[in-house]
Length: 304
Image 1: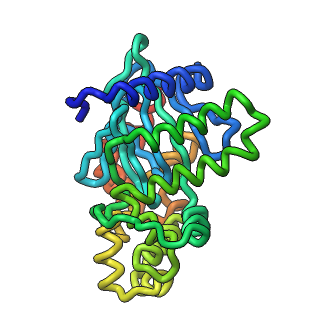
Image 2: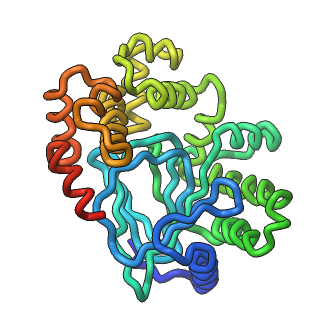
């Protein structure tokens, strides 16, 4: 993905981005910042495959490489490419390029669809392109104007008194530029009431809040205000999975977290996320994570 050499200006910007991330994220892992919804990351070695939930966000890298998988699809991004998640998606991710000499350095800026809606209402028609696939995850080539706006947001960390006034303005510019990207059409549609993408996103958020309940497709279709056939088609177009597959991943990821972080036993965690059969829970857990719950947790704890 990085075969083309970066333009000199982009390389200068990238170097400054790396310096700022290093300055405000000197340790390993994630660092919250004084800028709302902006998180920095640093790693000095490749990571194992991690199951996680991506919420709507822009992810930009200053150094290293990361691979994200959504079902059978692979998205690889690096300092020349950024990733956008337009909806909440259960994925796996792994840092594939990092070392003590050249750490993995990246940032995540969370996206609020309501903020995009307000921007669209204020700006009026802005010629959003329609080039994307409709998938809720997208990688695109980074350009100078977007990176310049992101850099101005990070520079505010050096002048905290300016954050409250200037950060919202820079965020608006970043969102404006994302609306002109290949993902712009989906971002706009999700933020616009009564579009199919907005209704699918309503179904996605409902599942995230009710994953422990039995899934009734007709009820979910009513929540989304779509027919059941349209819901299935559009849901899979955005998430690469059916509503049932999506709910299953939410349940299993949460059960794993409950066992690992809150010390729940296997049966209790399964029941808490909505499984009535411990054997079914163990079977589906093994299919997703590659090992039965007890063995998987033992491996995770020994790695820590």
